[in-house]
Image (cartoon, rainbow, N blue to C red; front, side, top):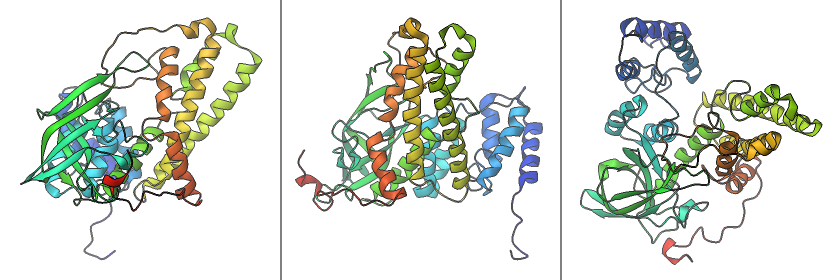
Length: 400
């Protein structure tokens, strides 16, 4: 390091800045949103982000120092479950590909939670094969006019903004004719309709886009390079789904373990053995997630996140199935079938029947398990790629 270089931010400096924030904005007397804005401006939102964008250019590992200090002071958080798509998917994509103006405009209200985000990727004919998407974006002066349909869109009914991929050149092969945009969900051409799920709720939506105008200034990355931009989103999505930080016995294994302890009358030798096996597997997955987050300190997430997401889906379905079986007739009860449009998914705060039904979607959302198995095989294990006969065929000439 040259003599003129600034010293690196270390844990002591992070701790000092956090305590200064708490002294200047006491959580007990500061309005929640004001505190979160002050935290962002102090660089303590996500410390590994650049200065001026909620960070301090510090190692990602130092975020736990901030979080521990704020938790001890009972400071408010930004309700990450409600704004998970913005935090886990939109933000890293904007940071990686956005202009300075886009970063300044979107990152602060995104992190504070003033603006909720959703993801307009999947379509009725382009789910597992996302690159086959048919939603079109046509240039019209300084705008793009978008027409098409998206599906399985979480939080679209409460979102202010969306990350959107659309086809801008049908004459190119499917991966090369896509561009990436930030879509205003308040545009009159955006029609959000509830999509009722097996749980009875509609946290998902289908979204119809009719003549939606997006300024070119809301494009992320070069025209036609949207697939590359989307890969950043997808890799971060899988980490945020499968690799979130939880305590020991957190997540789905917690409720069934508690039922086992509280209800000895339900125990059998078989369910005991299965619970032990799943408990160990859940703990292995949790520790693997910790290791993955340590790897993130050195850069962007890679295909390992797909493996974590695979494990998350499989474990959730197996654990919830064991819980329903352990409860016997009680496991068949379902607390509430009311059609509501929730703002977030709450696995552990609901009954066993809800967990069992909702976990079925874990192997579909965020990339199907079948597609993720291919990613792990090819990009982690180095196995040969599956034959793909459509890689060099213009999208308009593909069979649909």
